[in-house]
Image (cartoon, rainbow, N blue to C red; front, side, top):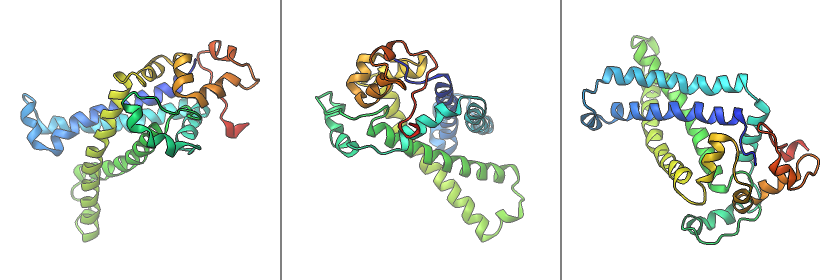
Amino acid sequence: MVRFNATQRAFHWAFAIPFLGLLLSGLPLSFPALRSWISGYSPQIGLRLHLVCGAAWILGPALVVLLGDRRALATVVADLFVVARGELAWLRQLPRWLAGLPCEMRGVGRFNAGQKLNGIFVAISSVVLAITGVILWIVWQSPGLVWTGGPVGRTIIGWSRWLHYLLTVLMMVPLLGHITLATIHPRTKESLRGMLFGTVDATWAKEHHPGWHAEISRGPSGLGERGVTEAPPNSVPTPSWER
């Protein structure tokens, strides 16, 4: 059954690939001790690579939003940011879920509570990282700007640098968890197929995301289970708030 259409997948990879480049180029800049692990490392090249990845990280998703299916992206935002009944109950079961033990999955939509928390944290952190990154880039590009020399300017630069470093480290935790769950964990690795090819196994969806499976199965005209297997490749479910 269809989980993500082409625009939704393009947005994810336009965000994820440059972010990995930002992380790999930025960590040696922030933590010089890591430079000894990279043969022939050049801080100047590392900084320029970081800036290129940063530009791609901001412009890539923006282009997808401008040129792609914005309604499809809106459904993902709605699914991520709307808190549904039973979210706290799911979080209480998280240790059992990670251990592969039986859990109550009733009502879980396209994203479970853990995925929602991760998505919200990444979205907010990304906005702060982008703003602080642009500030630090302006200071690096034009160190003689008048506003950078006063107490207010120094405070802004100091806070920008501190937040940029802190959020970089904090985002590594959900990133590693996200990669592990998407590639290794038996309960969630099927979701990687959805992000690569757009579709997931209907049995997996019914077991782990029963609320979403039921919504798609009904379809806009109540198609039932047949609507799951015969959904067109780029179909997008109509969110409940549009009905």
